[in-house]
Length: 244
Length: 207
Image (cartoon, rainbow over all chains, first blue to last red; front, side, top):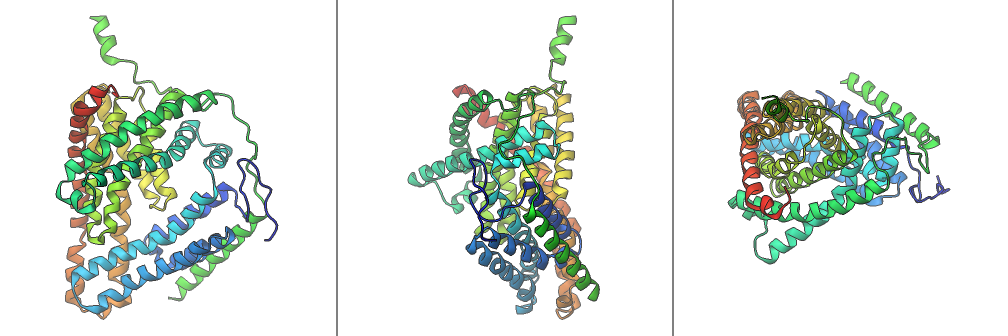
């Protein structure tokens, strides 16, 4: 586990990194099983997987935070109705049960977002033969979301400076808040978008020939280990579920 | 007469998208996600706001969506937008069924846009309303999350009356009413988007 992976311009800096295709398959497996009826049984397995992935990437805060968040959600979901027999508390606890499922899937999703840069992700999607209409627009979306989030922060700061921010203001004047927030956001983002699309067109985004990758996606030892762990976790869950 | 029909049918029913179209889809997908996400973040103030914040998010999303429609050049662009937006939602942990619901909603929206020959203002508002129903997919697991919960051993201790009340509060009827409200709120979002388009963006030359 100790030896660092070879670092490259688009490659990961350190730690054990999965092939993006493996990570996506693990995420989909967790998401499909947990969000299915009766999927609550698969939550512990997904939490173990999310924690192991966080440890593999040495994200200690997440390795502790994901189980803690799950424990809090589970506490609200299963213990709150015992406090008092009010249907409102029951409603909140059903919501918390849904949040618990989201935490379990989200723990794995964050790993994917943190370890896989858009270039590696698109290379992997291309290797998985996804049509270019989706990979090109998806890559632009992934590249552009952080830019827009920083623009949104700037707009939010400017609104607060003028005393227009705050969640309560949104509830009091929803339409006006939407106008004050979205109009400057669209205007400044579209200006940034012009530069971005000119630059990516120049660099050949969406061109017909299939681009080659500096680090072609390859399955390796980490993927094999991850596959074995996921199969063991899945089998354990099925056996445990039958026990009940 | 012939020239009139050529103008009316336009060139927008072919599916060939240029790299520029794909970049536009990605940019507006990101704008749509961030706009909806910012207003959805209200739910962290209080979990009771979850449904309200989703509805406010749908109204806000009308602004980037209507701006996007002014740049649609080909059939299929709305569907690609729906796929990458729900694909992104999938990556951050939303239920996979959302992708299916989003594609169906987007195809419905495309049919309306086609009926309005991709330029009708009235049809584009309706198209946003139909597109907005993809949020239903996000809440579909609530139906069976509720069933899992109501039949759990904890509920046995709470008494039949309590379970009955909770069942009524989370009944399929209430959840279906929420689903229908996405359509209504989407319609309002489309109207707001159109209004802001005229008020701000047309003047600034962004449309």
